[in-house]
Amino acid sequence: MDNPVKERIEKLRGMMQRNALAAFIIPSTDPHMSEYVAPHWQAREWFSGFNGSAGTLVVTPDEAGLWTDSRYFLQAAEQLKGSGIELYKDGLPDTPSIEVFLQTHLRPGEAAGIEGQVFATSSACALQSALKTRSIRLQSIACPFREIWTDRPPLPEGKAFVHPMEYAGRSCHEKLADIRQRMEEAGAEALLLSALDEIAWTLNIRGNDIHCNPVVVSYLLIEKEKARFFIQPAKTDAELEAYLAANGIDIHPYEEVQTFLAQASYPTLWLENAKTNYALSQVVPPTCRLIDMPSPVALLKAVRNEAEMAGLRRAMQRDGVALAKFLKWLEEAVPQGGETEISVDKKLHAFRAEQPLYMGESFDTIAGYGAHGAIVHYEATPETDIPLKPEGFLLLDSGAQYLDGTTDITRTIALGPLTQEEKEDYTLILKGHIALAQAVFPEGTRGAQLDVLARMPIWQRRMNYLHGTGHGVGHFLNVHEGPQSIRMNENPVTLKAGMLTSNEPGVYKAGSHGIRTENLMLAVPAGEGMFGGYLRFETVTLCPIDTAGLIREMLTDDEARWLNDYHRTVYEKLAPDLDEAEREWLKKKCQAI
Image 1: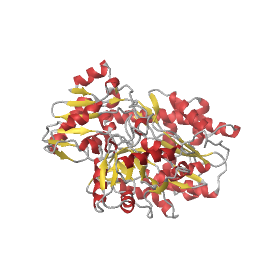
Image 2: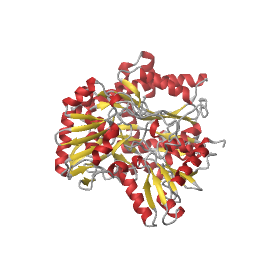
Image 3: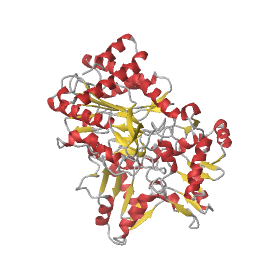
Image 4: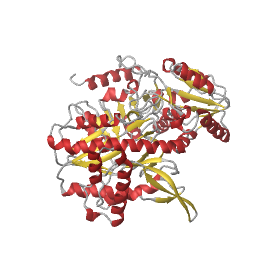
């Protein structure tokens, strides 16, 4: 076979036949339901060839399909060519769900297989319920790829380290006390944390187990008087062990968590089904009552304390300095020729790496020039890399990890002359961005209630984007974190003061261009008003927004005033750390319109 994916799919079908399975489902997650996963758990990518962060592969004896969302439609279509795997565009009206696909392709009495260790309990139970209506079974298989994926990467073994109090703001002891109070209120004797960002935040530790996400592969079981930390022994040292012991935390081998839970005698165990893998939840003794509620850590973590907010603003200032230096370089370098999507990615990394407390990128940079900008999560490779010309748009979505904060920013940069359509689209997206940035809203507001503000300018032109408008961002943690969001889909979590959320409307036209403008915003008090308190957004990202693509007449005076005020702040915050030439460049870019 000329395509290795085809051979791997055939071997997978052999495994299915040996286990009497009529289908097998491979998600993109790990045992901790992570969005980004270590190479050891990248089975969906290995079997399909598609390397986006979200997608599910379904294989039957005769067909194979991959479901992914709008961020990856173009990328998946390209990467699946020649594989025999059909692309299913999730979220579109004509696309069947995986449940419906299995219901129509399997016969009563047949079984669909999963690896329970990488399936959320809630997802497995929902799938099981849907298939049961057609008398189809769901069967969990342990280690299904052992004989197929023979060169599978090992479990990550990077060292864990303590995140200093000066950046964390609250001690591990204080955080555990808050969590235990919520456990008592819920009537839980113990709480199992599987989500890696929640564990890292609770213990004030960080690691490098997942690319760009400073987390540690582990489990944390919190009891009333102590906690049990399940982690590979190679990941700890004497200093970390002493730190954990001082906080009443016992260390156990990572692989023993399932055995420990199987022998647990807790009357009640708090275990969030959406974040706990199916294999783990199924071993808990029936005498233990499971409490399936959202983890208390998610909300505690999402609301920044004073030290975290101060650190975040410092990180944004340093990141802005690096971006200003880079953008000045970019403006001068492109007309000279020789720059490509990959080369500018490397240059931006170099500018950021010069900044104090820099720990790495928060995700792989998206540098999409021209038509590549329409691929929402495009990542340039040596095969796709193209030169930049002094014309059209470059969409640049990037971020950094600093010890005192995580950044995420998108700028769409005019490298030269633009079409009228490009200018109109760019201005419409900025109008939506400004509308959300200016929002003032009562406490108790959900992100879905604000999402329309960012979309209305393009909706009026019968355009839309299918990704969310805003996601939560961690504190020297994952660039995508909940529980809050701003998107069309309903999310019951209300926005609270101290929450950090992105603001990133966009528009993408295949084969032509893509535009996105993204800043991070901190929800802050806006004072008392009718029926209670109100909140607003403080834009904390500091970087000029390119005005070369704007059509001034399309902006209201109020929108222009917001942009001018924002640029005044950008200049005041960044100028002191730039040299004279850089300050002059920034002053020009921040001129009032």
